[in-house]
Image 1 (tube, protein in one colour):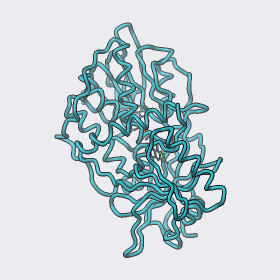
Image 2 (cartoon, protein in one colour; image 1 turned 180 degrees about the vertical axis):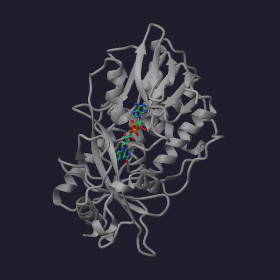
Image 3 (cartoon, protein in one colour; image 1 turned 180 degrees about the horizontal axis):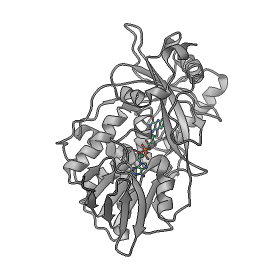
Image 4 (cartoon, protein in one colour; image 1 turned 45 degrees about the horizontal axis):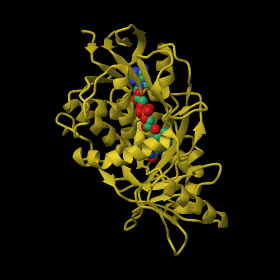
Length: 392
Ligand SMILES: Cc1cc2nc3c(=O)[nH]c(=O)nc-3n(C[C@H](O)[C@H](O)[C@H](O)COP(=O)(O)OP(=O)(O)OC[C@H]3O[C@@H](n4cnc5c(N)ncnc54)[C@H](O)[C@@H]3O)c2cc1C
């Protein structure tokens, strides 16, 4: 077997939605780019284990980089989704008040949305907050479509390409792959999710730490004749954003996620007690779930920064590295904004870019359609409780 020897102007490390969106954006700005993914396919980590909700940023804190990039993404996204045939349900979200204090929270959220320029309204009949721009996609199809379009525009995507070493010189960077391969580039972009801190350390950068925040989900089939046509969001409390209920593109309904801080970056299991935790909260806002048995369950690991969020920029340790790390809870929504923000940094590092080109149609990779959550649930099936255990 020959070992890989790859060269490109920019090497993106990590093929989640963030790495795919950066690769997509750079390829469409005329940059010779390679995406390196350690796994056997893209979007097996956080990017394939989330809620698939494309947030508008209505509840995001004004002025933060995260908010700026969610909003920037929302402006870019419709044309990209359309050109690449990525499925979306333009469902809108509803937050229905149950406690007297919820009405104050809803008024505060409406004011926050106005500051962020996001359309919302308050329903007269019950005081619910309506957010028409919130939508649901297939996060795996979304990631694969971005990568597929990048490839059609000239990018390379390398799977089973785990970066285990890095050395820099005045000219650029050399990355060592676990299988003995080597990648040379002028610049590396670190979008390695849960392992972004490990990658940064290869460059002598120990300025941030990533830990996994687990979120557990349950997938349901509604009884005959029953459908859910919008995203059910709980009214948040000071402590938590809570459990949401959302429809999938294939006609199922998902409830989750939990938020459990962990140390083990490989623990994709669903805790047996998660079912009660999730279902109690979900059924309070969507009673149709009461008494239903889930048909599948999965867990996602948010790449959370310890005391930090959205670490994006040139590393202090090396100007051959851009970190794009700690994209904890909104990376699917913000990914195209992140891609544009990162691409804007390149000319300052001596890498020329062109104007952004229109998305290139995908030629050699079909965008999957169907039950993306099943791919996710099957991946870690051995670690999940059985339906009988869940029911107990
Ligand atoms: C429970 C949950 C619910 C969420 N809900 C939403 C939501 O509804 N909407 C939303 O916008 N966001 C949501 N998010 C957040 C979103 O999923 C993340 O912000 C986003 O997926 C982060 O993408 P990423 O590409 O940075 O990381 P990842 O998807 O984790 O990708 C990182 C990739 O790097 C690869 N990698 C790691 N180490 C190496 C190495 N050494 N060499 C090469 N490759 C490597 C990994 O294999 C992985 O594929 C949710 C997340 C979770 C977990």
